Image (tube, rainbow, N blue to C red; front, side):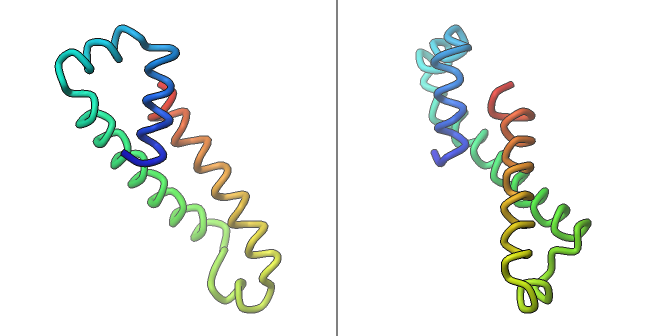
Length: 91
């Protein structure tokens, strides 16, 4: 299921019990979580690429100033994770 699917599963169990129970009784829970995971991973990957491009976080920067590149990438990953969580996982 993956990280995103597991996060969504936890959300369903704690906040959306009716949806969780319906999916489980219809034997659709695993397929649903797999789809959510795939959508979230695709969204995450696409946003990472977009943010890297818009903020000039390139391989050249990585070669010249590794610490700055790591700082930028960590910042981008955190922001993108928050976006994916808000848009797909905890919706």
